[in-house]
Image 1 (cartoon, rainbow, N blue to C red):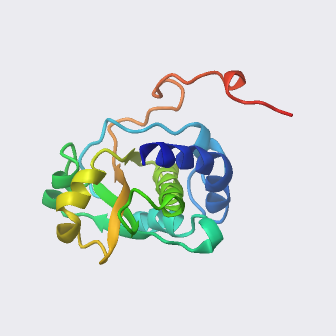
Image 2: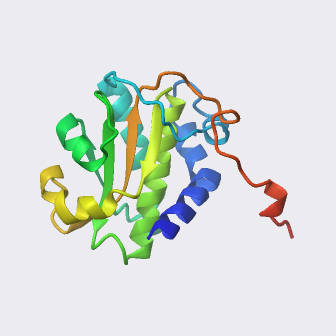
Length: 192
């Protein structure tokens, strides 16, 4: 499952995130800056996210592309800190978890997994475009599906596929100095 989510995240950054942002307004919106300069945040700090910003971030997920426009996802916004810490122990006060789920077991329906990964990437980038830190998690998914689906209130028959942590950060890292090293594009891109 993780390889499908990773592949979908890469595809969404290249093909899908920009059109979503082009239809919104706000800081760094409508430019590829949010895509090229993103950093998976580690330096989360306390502080609530205003509801208007959270709604904008969620809209990026809602407007994500999906196969045959099926939009198979459901977004569960976890603001309860006790519940959030059950899923991701590093959560600090004010962080929000957005759990993306779809019908099925969350492991075998490749199309829904990729669709949910596209939505996760859109949410991740929208949060950063608004100046927040964000991080995509797939590691906690098995634990959520084994023991937290009911507590989180996932829709009946749904399983978590990915989650995005959003919150304030102590200092905004830039995409160059804050990012992990990347392979050179010429080692993984071919033009024919």
